[in-house]
Length: 288
Image 1 (cartoon, rainbow, N blue to C red):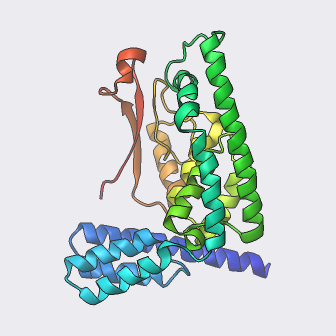
Image 2 (image 1 turned 60 degrees about the vertical axis):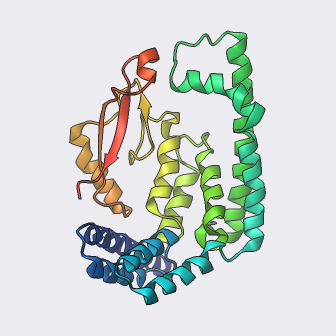
Image 3 (image 1 turned 90 degrees about the horizontal axis):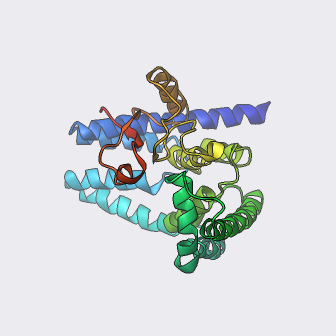
C-alpha cells in the first residue's frame, strides 16, 4: 500500500512538472521571458532528472535576456548530462543499434522497399508475384532481428530499469527509441505499454516518446491509435471523429501532453495521391 502511494505521489509530481513546463512554454511564446524562466525552474524542482530538451529551452530564453550566468549554468548542465551516467550501458546500446540499422540500410533496405510500399500505399500489389514474396522475405527477416534486439533490450530493462537519457545520454536514448519503435510485433502494446507507462511515471521518458511507440504499434496499422501522435498519411480515413477529440485531449493531458490538438484532413499535395488516390493526413497542432 505504501509503495502504491509513493508511486502515485511521484506520478503526480511528474504530471505537475509537465503542466508547469507547458505553462512556461506559453509564457515564452507570449514574450514573457522572465516569467517563463522562473516557471520552468520551478517545474524542475518537481523531478529528479530534467531532460536536456527542457534545459535547452531555458538556456535559449536566458540568451534572449543576455543572462550570461544562467547561460553558463545550463550549458554546463547540458554538457554534464549529454553522455549519460553509464558508459557500459551506452556501449551495449550502441551495439544493438548497429543491428537495428543494418536491416534498414544498403541491400536489406532496397530488398524490403517494394513490400513496405505495398503494405503502406499500394494495396493492390500482386501478393503472389515473385517480387512481392522475395521482398516480404527480407521484411520478415528484419522483423525477426528486431524481435531479437527487443528481447535483449527487455532483458536489460529487467536488470537496470528503463534505460533512458539519464543513463545513456541523448544519442544513446535515440538508439533506444529506434529499437522500441521497430518492435512492430507488439500490436496490442501488451509488452511495451506497462514498461513505458512505469518509465513515464518515474520520470525516465517524456510522454511524447512513450506514445510514439504505442501509437505506431497498435493494431498493426497506423489508422488505429490511442493518442493519435504517430504520423499518418494513407487512403483510409482515421478511426476518430470530431466528437472523439475531447476524449483524445483528456488522454493526452492525463500523461502530461497539453494544448496539442488533433484533426484529420485530405492531403491535396501528397505525391501518392497521383498514384493511389485520395490520401488522409493526421495533423497535430497548437492553438497557443
